[in-house]
Length: 221
Length: 374
Image (cartoon, rainbow over all chains, first blue to last red; front, side, top):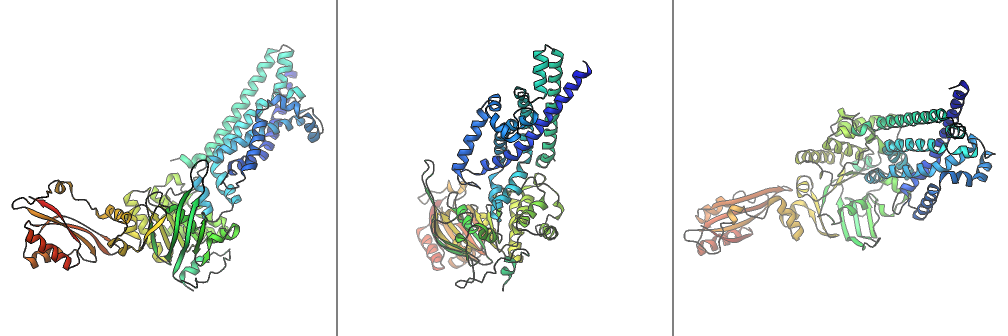
């Protein structure tokens, strides 16, 4: 493989990591509070607001059921409003964030709901405020689950990021389509797939390691 | 100012408004005033009257047991004391304040003077023993230095100073409950609520935990409210008892009085758990209705009161000049009073039976004739 092609791969990997990294951060910034709220706002819960809960749940479901490639195209005006352009890696972060936040929210909701309800009652019994309960009880107790959720979200984002080539977003997926498929360069396609597999493996291992580290308290002997 | 008050407001950060000793009844730590609690119908399930017309006081500094079968309303009752539940009608007065009228920040401040321990310990798995104990102090806004000193004190108080850095997964059930107790006492509460705190523990550990609670009551003067379905817990620890059944208080008072003269069937069934009303199988199977020749009459004598049963057999034998056989006996001590029954065999003629029963009733023993054995 020529040095130019290798350079292309390196550049595309950088674009992918940039898009996925920023989108994961922003997705978590929106998705974590949203997920905590979804997990604590049903009737009788900490931040009980059943109607808001249901409305947000419906919005989350709607976003999650829209195919990503359609989402990317559908929100182009919004992307232009936020990023100033609808083309390029930076612009691609907008649909990636919008797709990942609800996904992360649902994963966070599931992880938080795993926490024993008795702990909420216990913290309430010694006068903890709802915010203190979230920060000092729910999130620390759910941390292993939250880390695994985040890992899953990053892996999914890597997959989504392959599609943003459709709007000139660049990245590994785009490289694979343009060179590997359209220019009949199977070795390029193979290289792209290998790099993606390596990235996913790396992210998953890192996530597993961190989750196990914070979880060691639960089961080490 | 008494000891409880200095404990209640001992928190150095929060200036909990000093509570005047309740003007009306200075010795009541908790007062329930005509409380009812109804859970409304929800999703097809009918509404539940969990508590009805609850009216009683828990004396300051006492250890009070609240005993009842599951579903009797014990959990609802204890949660009214720390404001986790609101009564549908009536008021719960804790240390002179109507806790059922408090909400938000005021309620959270008041909750710091009411500790609670749980059946399943409810420790945070992500925190060490010390950090679990520190949690209520962090929430109350104590400084790191104050927390460190207080946590060390508490670990020593509950006898697990060496478990400072252990996670709950590394502790036994008894040790976990000790952490729970230390955590509940962290903010120097004046009341400690125990919700079936020993129900998940083996008998030996239960005994040790109950001893610890007795020490805490004695040394810190903390009023303890024990929710339990186990008579043995009440017997070992409580001085006062409230018997709950189907949302009603059916009996309440000193443990010794209630259990030496149980009136309600529920109270009697709890008592039977400890002293046993049933005869040994080998004896019961031999009892017949008609006197066999040369047989013995079987008479059961209830024993109630201090030292009541000690000499009854000897006196009966001596004063009536009879051979009295002791067929079965079960006597236990509850609140310093002997409670139980003796099953005696006396010569089987009508005449002797009548004399024995008359003698027993003369000395205020309740007795019944069960039949005859050969």
